[in-house]
Length: 262
Image (cartoon, rainbow, N blue to C red):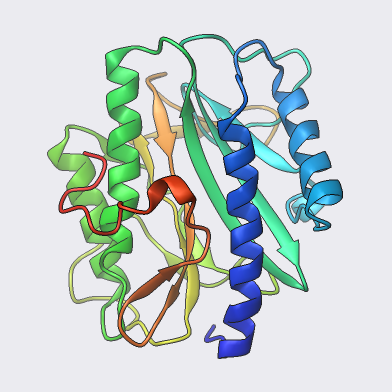
């Protein structure tokens, strides 16, 4: 659960490499591509350009390098050559990368073209919820502080958070203790210690928090078929606060924002 400074240094390398995957995707027009084309593009970039391993491929029997969750899909969307990304969609791309034996995990919801104002607002709220959670991370804080901040931000903006899925410890394995819930009570739960590394990854729904898994056994969708958005970072607890290991260059000001991505 607690990593050494040397281990965190290796995880920081993995995190920076993973951030560069999203920065590569930022420069691509997703509209008109199939989700399988995006999967294959990311796989080539991770393996060829970054000399790294896409850690999701083969994990739990999953055959692909990323999850692609469009519109009402909450998480675990499966790449498909027949599923074309449309102008107006929102799509979460959840990607993992392993380098030197250590894994980083991050996701971002992209707004594709002329998405509705409501869709854009939901994406901002989901991103803001993640940052509200991240801002709670420091030695002596509790996991309940993170979950409470996330859920409060979503609730104040008229949205809900999914409870069935959550953040998690990470290191040489993709999923390690502890579970990092997206709801909670302040001052409760595991106390944070310097050296802990975990993900914070709220899934925020436009309507009800209730979800259902489709027949493929992977794809999770909103029960009411309304939109869902997610953001995720891998973070380390430092002696003074938090280090976002998967931070992208376009997020440099997010930690300092009083009410980020509202």
